[in-house]
Image 1 (spheres, rainbow, N blue to C red):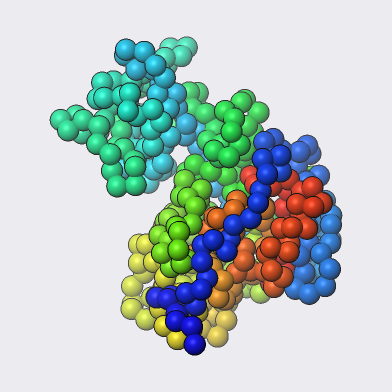
Image 2 (cartoon, rainbow, N blue to C red):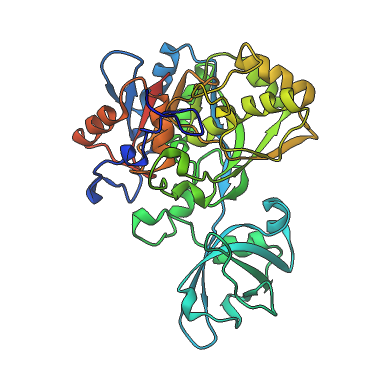
Length: 416
């Protein structure tokens, strides 16, 4: 008998099993137009794969008797800044999250705002002030700790404080001076079109540093068709962090430390989840949020408390099985439980670190709309947990049929 790792899943599942050969020409650097014309590969529970486009999504969902279509309404902030050092040279700063408080407050600050950041060309920057000026707007950045200077945190981040004049809020500063944070695998700088193209049509709450890319395929025409079919979108919020691009650690899957991301849930969201049974999620972030809600209910039922951060291995604490037993007969039961106990005042704000991996039992949905993901990523690991068909077969078919991959690429509909 093979030994099991600390999650209860067989140790033989290695990070290397989620690698495949993705050539550069298969990576989409720009989106198709219109958005709904992107290819959509239907992956059924059994039977042949079906080739279509996102214009076929309404009919596919009708076939599945879908009763709610969930999307992530987070909005990408223009979190990449290029500043000038006093003695010359450009400094690239990538904002990750506020040092204190929540994103909404940090973006509304009027004169100063402190953030955890990544810095490119940091070796050429000591502790002097860097700046950027444009059309009466002046922005300066310094290390938050003025005495210690620029200190590298665990994980390679830095604490920086931004000050400005000429704009009402830090959110306005980023709208004017910031650039869209395109993924590194696009190998290009963002242009003016990306401020629209790298944003979903239902984006509402600023806070992400990467787009929930499955949602990029929806446009107003497609949403109208879905509404006509009785399927208006249902919203939830997960602010996507830079950790989404972090590759799996070498070795066993249990060696990987999952990134945490912030979720925002309302009573209306829980009511809708409790009253539907055939849900379809748009994107891995939507699925991660939906599944996190279930495990939040489990943890509270067991401990009487809701954790501020839902732990990575919460679903796997029983060493004898890949996904442990729970006190709820159904996902809907768990949502009814949350309606009675969750701190909805009016929005429930928590962070999730859960890792969805092979052996995990998905409870919240009957299908997932998602893109084709990067080799060696946690997103591909999640997809493998959802597919009845081996993911390698699906990805090979997509590559051979010239599907476009990654953020601006095509998508698939995975039936569970």
